[in-house]
Image (cartoon, rainbow, N blue to C red; front, side, top):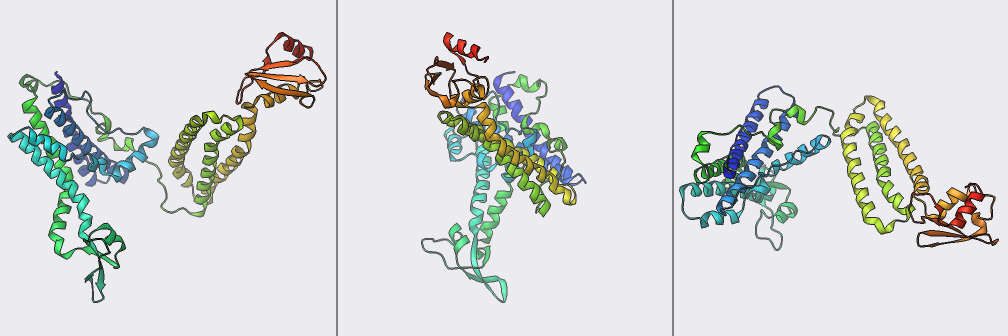
Length: 430
């Protein structure tokens, strides 16, 4: 199958997936299926529709440039298991990202520059309808105005005075700060407001119409009759389209975040938050104790990664912990608070032990051990660092020790760097 034939087949599959997703939403709306699956189906429908729009736009641009189609059509990725609930909320809040992927005036100009053609004119008309939907979403809020209600009729009244520097009662400054207590559609723009709202709500149908028009154009101009008469094996759905009909697996059922925390749930939330902050602080503690400020960027990135992991884990596990009955909902928070105190108290000493500077390493390894009763005790010597060597000079005139590797934040034990130092350590049984 040629490159364009593969792209056309993938676009056709994506369009069918968008229709299947819409049908799935209607199926769940008419049934008694749990609401989580219904909400997941709605989100999938929006995402798959947006993928259809993105695929059609990418192939249309390649066709107008007379270029080869992309090997892999653009589709949204479903986030991995622990983050899928976050992905669901993100995509649901923005309707799958449809508004940011509607092509603008540049693609319209490219269509006009390719001359007059019935199929191109149909694509241009569908694109214009999509742009009208985007304009409806952008401009419909401007149809509202602040007004001063009439005491006899709350929906009647006088339009609020315009603020200086504005010439439209629908301007966002007037809608938010004008001296009025009510908000209504501007009486002289009701028909325009209805049309803008209709255009905004029609975006889902118009996406399908635009994708179908692009598919027909590409089939006529880029397809091959022998391929159309003998299609290959069906393509495997991927990305969001794969999950159509699998909504319970996409969002496994589980307790959600309570709308308002009771006192015991607040204890658990505060305990988990304290433990999370303590874990996030560990990389900064290591950097500080080991004096590795030259590598601050690495530790800051590590802190950011730990913070992201902690937030994800708390977001995922906290609702389940806070769903315990009654006072037992506070038990996980108490345990987390005790763990947080332990983390805060232990991270400094542990970092000092494992990421010591050369003098601390000498004190741990020798001064508190085999050299405790020798002339090489810390109180009886002068020390300095030269290169990666720790120089220990006894005040009593004994042989000088050269130990290494001497580096800040090092985890390797010190050892003798010359024959004389090895003899001294062997003499004292080190």
